Length: 115
Length: 112
Image 1 (cartoon, helix red, strand yellow):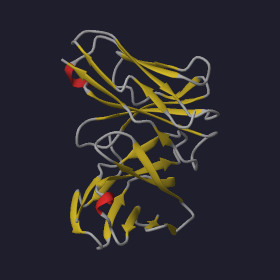
Image 2 (image 1 turned 60 degrees about the vertical axis):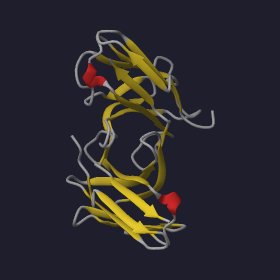
Image 3 (image 1 turned 45 degrees about the vertical axis):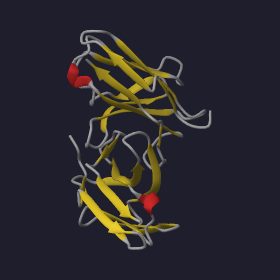
Image 4 (image 1 turned 45 degrees about the horizontal axis):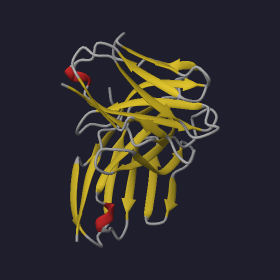
């Protein structure tokens, strides 16, 4: 596609529910990133994929968070037993080949609100 | 945790003036990227500067990098109201992982 596409753009869920956020990277981009951004803060790294494998998942805050990229393209970020503190914008980004040195392109984000 | 810190946190200038934002970081980097963000949604890539480069230009943007001081600056010349946004630096480290660490951002307001 023309850019990184994220769905849904907005999601309101009740505390304790399960949520999936989807990211469709730019066609041909092998690297994919998930970030989380709270109001007034910079994006916080969650996980980085190179192809199908998670090359670095050190930013996932706890085991309620999980991400997959089974075919090396679309990725899904999964959050179990959501908490109010999970409310944030979840940003996905992709880049061509292996960074560093390649520009990473961001989607518009998925705004998650846990009530 | 955030590696980079932007300075100032907020900046308000008149249209036509220049805006300078600074970014400091802590560990060795391969490259540094600057991004703009409007209304808290998607980030727009502005410039990538590699660790062996000292200065890059793109239109009204000028980025410098001083690896000895672990700092970078973004200069926007002849600012416009449309430049009003938050600006972030992101560093790509040399630690063997390819994650980018973002700073806390500078909120720029350009008054017409």
